[in-house]
View 1 (cartoon, rainbow, N blue to C red):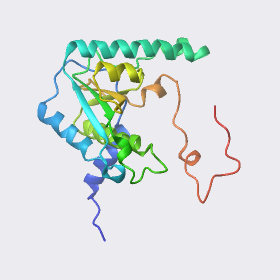
View 2 (cartoon, helix red, strand yellow):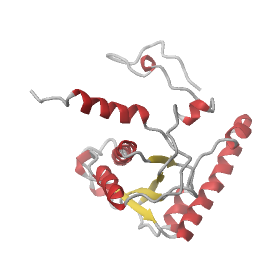
View 3 (cartoon, rainbow, N blue to C red):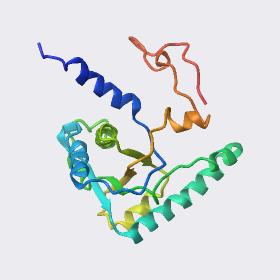
Length: 219
């Protein structure tokens, strides 16, 4: 039987999980290159369906590209606000990205030529995206262990980012990650603090032997 981690090692894993936050506030201090390399390597060691390793990571070091990405995000932020109707003003008060302040900006994308990978994807082609999400989560937890904040920005026009970064046909950007030092980690998810949403009870998300017939509909 496999041996578990000792108590302190196990506690460290759970601490990273529970204290991970989607960060929006950063301080202007560079990330040690050795630490950045560890984080990228952690992402690259994520599980992937059929071992296809579909993640591609673009590190943005050009100031003009960073500005261009931020402009794309800002356009989508305004479009999202308009689509929210009565919650528009509430949404506009939220800080949804830290792209100007973060030390490192990374664009995470799906590889091109993914149609060649059939193992595990014949009936669930979206498992390539699930694999990329695993890579992002690996980096997120490793960043928390390193004392660095990471924020996932998903408000952007996919085609605009694709063009800006000169991605090949078939590749697809799925996340802009802000990475850097922070003064402190949020004590709870920021959207809980702002009363935008709250965490569901675990019992509402875990079923046994099928879907409950009385599962309530959610808006």
